[in-house]
Amino acid sequence: MKNFLYVSVLAATISLILVSCNKNTPEAVVEKYCTYYYQNNFTDIQNYVTESNKDFYRKMAQALENSQQEVVPNVAVKNIECEVESDTNATCSCLIQITDPETSEQEEIKKVIPLKMENKTWLVDLGKEDMLMPEDKDANTSSKASKSDAGETVKEFADDIIDGIFSDEEPAEN
Image (cartoon, rainbow, N blue to C red; front, top):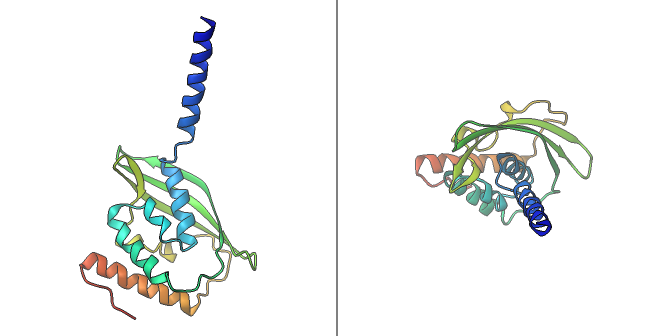
């Protein structure tokens, strides 16, 4: 009887540990997605988006493949709150803190991100208008709002990709 109790407690502890380490929660997906997005890691981000979004991020990764990576910012995703609306849909809000490691300039952005369950996995599911996380939805920006010419070029290229994906046309080449 003592061994049975010991084995039962051990099994319950292991089960609890496995459940708490689950990376397939809306919160975990949002954290990874936002981190990869703001670090321009469009290769790894593809593991956290729906099939309908993968083509966009695949093209973004290809576009940035030969460009020289600027300093990768430190990204902290905080205050993640998710509302699971059904077995297949959820909406999460979060606060993203982006810090430039060279200048220590910090920017805070609030985002609302929709998720969808595909093949028993939570994935970010953005529509065309949300694909680039437009600035007009940002809040509490504490850094300078100016953009570099290179950043504008990437945004223009991404807009072309989005237009091509949603209109079944190839994006214009620059």
